[in-house]
Image 1 (cartoon, rainbow, N blue to C red):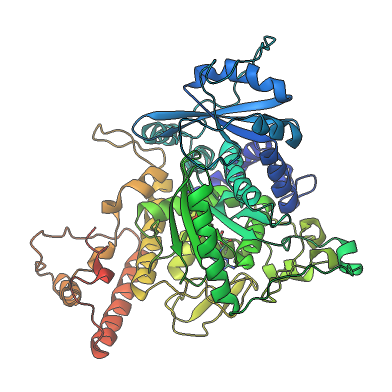
Image 2 (cartoon, rainbow, N blue to C red):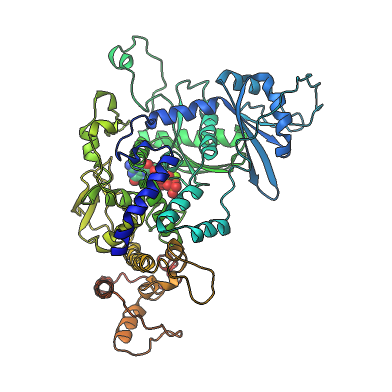
Length: 612
Ligand code: GTP
Ligand code: MG
């Protein structure tokens, strides 16, 4: 820990450099967003970009010059981005951005239907650039030299080998965290493509619902998304997201639309609409495939894949709180340049040690994990983030937002009003270690996590992990997390604290045996076998073996499993103590489980991740 502190000044400089590079003026004054777009401005800018854009499939990036020349007839092209969708072969696309929505509409309007297919003649921003002379005479074009592509193969994920090389070659853990964030976060093209997917849905129903809005939310827009992340989309038939204009509020119109009355209750009506809408997407929208309806979930969704954007989409029609939650996370990410790189690293760590999983289940979700990081940053002696309660208190009348179910999502959208300014100067590697240490000690048994208060509260029920839902405070965001998964998290944070502390202390000592140098985050991510405590010490397929294992090991006898387990030596007395207390807690939980007759059968799904 001391060596971390010694290096903090140097590392602080690194993140300052990072802020300058990322155009983040708050490096000098964390907590202020002066001059930066707020969430609604950020969303608005990308929505307009989408309205100005078309996506054209081409045979390869070599078609760009010809495409540029052809499409320049419809307006002034501001930029072009190339990307590939990799199936059996790579399919090439170019996203063109025009200066105005009218120009993009002109390009779309000039398209023709593919006569070779018997499909429905739908118009959308997704087009195909066929070879010259196909069908009708090409107009004579004045040669118009194309500026360079802004991206070539712009959605390709960073090669793992390359990323490892970058992490190996970094100067210190601080730089590793920044490199990881820089090379894995969702890039500008990824964001553009997600807004185009949203626009396509919105335009598809614009005739009947001219005020309809399809808004991306979640990690695609809150700044915590990685390349390839899913798109969460919310569709509202009426314009009820964001601020109301003062005119709308003050002078209600006397002309009222005739409307069909809902005959069933709200939820089944939403399910019915979604079913119908799912059919519409499936039958008519170009690129939309593998449509699945998940209508019984708490928030009913339609899932689909977009083949021209290579994107998984989750579309919902209710749950505006999720949308506003994304705004809160966006604001937290903007308030301090350490927030996002730190969260990325923790999400990556959780993924590599199997704590998170792309499918929902009894394990912690990325969203809950992100809440743990935000809470950690709020409760520091010198907090890096303000509480949500403080944001709510600082709200003005223009910040009022209420969902259709009457849930208040009112909080200030102007962080400057808070007067919050963090004096915390910790480096990213210090914060990372402190995060692991904090949750190593956290009393998940009795305490709930509240981002509204920024401090732990008494747990209102017996859920294994309790994170108060910031916008619906009677709900628990991590209700799904099982006792086993919560224990797993506690074990893994202890391991991580141990590994990271050792890494920092040994930072300048290369591995002796001639292997490729692996250090810092690489060891945190890549070597679960180095862990002092392994979850499979506790979660064996047959739970009865677990306590046997402890008892035999403690008595110095050979464990009953076939492979002998190497003896564990503890460098650090507090880790040894923690190991002992986990063992004791697990023993008593096992006893309780046995007592209540709820021991899990050997092959139940609960145990399927235990044999890693
Ligand atoms: P990844 O999809 O894993 O990259 O992360 P994500 O942040 O997009 O999470 P997810 O797709 O599960 O959820 C999308 C968004 O919905 C989150 O970012 C939150 O804004 C919101 N959300 C998810 N779960 C809850 C919840 O329990 N309560 C509230 N208020 N919002 C939620
Ligand atoms: Mg998501």
